[in-house]
Amino acid sequence: MSQTRRLSSSLEMTSTKAPPPRRGSELRRDRRGSGYSSGFSSRRPSIDPSRLIPMDKTTHVGGTDNFNVVFVGAGNIMFGSDEGPWNHSFRFEHKLGLRLKVVAIIDPAIERANAALKKKCDSFVVSAYQNTRVYKTLEDFVKHMTEKERPRAIVVGSPPMFRGTLQSGRDVEMQIMRYFPGVALFIEKPIATGPKGEIEEAFKIAKLISESNSICSVGYMLRYLKAVQKMKQIIQENDLVVMATIARYACAYEAITKPDWWDKSKSAGPIIEQGTHFCDLSRYFGGEVDISSVTAHSLEWDEEAGHLSKIHIDENKIAPENRIPRATAATWKYDSGAVGSLMHVVTLQGRNYSCELEVHADGYSLKLVNPYVQPVLYVRKPGDDYEQTFTFPDDDPFFSEVSNWIDIIEDIEEDPEAAQILSTYEDACRTYEFTWAIREASERSRSKSLATRRAATTVVQEPVPEEENEA
Image (tube, rainbow, N blue to C red):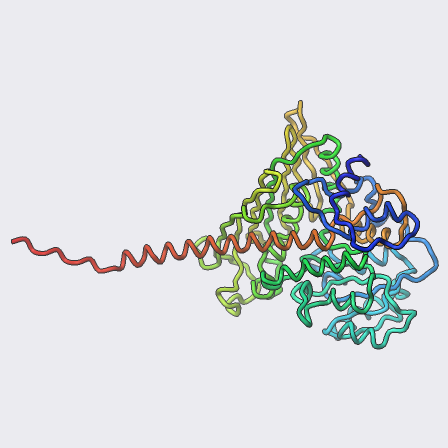
């Protein structure tokens, strides 16, 4: 397995700057995720699933020195909510224990940030937050920062509309690299939700991050699921070539009450903002996508089948052209020749989503079910018509991605089989580009359909000349 992993690591882009010599530096370069994967191979970096230890069974990272962290963003992803399991601060507290010192929270919504900070200071993790200060901007923090408060790592959980570009006010990565060159970065997905024309800016940022030698991880946490790593293990150990991926994502729209999510001009639409996880997993197994091959169709809000009965926001306040599709069906070819498909639907009520990913290879079917709540993996192998079932109780990919990232920052192990960055910034840019290709393909399809309907209506409405009376 280690031989296979070294092969997949060799597909990662090497930084233009050699990392500073240190213990395990040669092995560390393969683990740190400072580059990008090119070519059509689906053999991307992976982790032995047995090494993904549940949060309640891990031990705090040892040491007596403080681990200074800056949180950029004070919203749900950073401090949790009732809408889902995300809560980065909670995972950092368990990973670092008393060493964690959150030196600053950066958020223009000062009241929200202070409210989140007060809850932390009133809890058993007060030691991590008792000296935390809140600032509207990163620049404000830098002006008041002491050398003792210099961050070792920065977690970016601000809304994607404010990052991933070179535009002033939407360039948090560039600001961080300017003020803290080489600092470790954890950045939430998607990397941006701006106009398609800004995708190239994201790739430029990826190059700069790689050249800065920063240890950078992007929050595609499903890659860190034990079930997903078990799938990678089966593929690698049996030297399989992926032939097809089939993804299905049904979200529970009743619980989505953020108006911006329903507005394509704010969130970029459900494929880019939400379906991105399954587009990313599809790439993780299938390899690079032939962007020119992407085709897609959508069910829109104004079509007969597109009515939703339990939307808890006023969609009339959103411009018609910015309302999200109710369903999107996409297909594509991978550079390897394999094929892929995605069905994303905004149909379920209640709270729980229904999601599945199938990966097919010669003789094998790997089906991941319910990855967000309680992952189950069904495996069919050659010589057996029945599926084998694997369950993964108490798995927490949010913790695993944070834990692996911190282990690499700390240079915990020299073993290349240990912690690895599974989603680099460059890799995340490719997923972002892919999701935009799906959205664009569906919009082209809709435009073509509307044009055909208009043409048919015009033909029907044209007056028919009266026939001349016969003599």
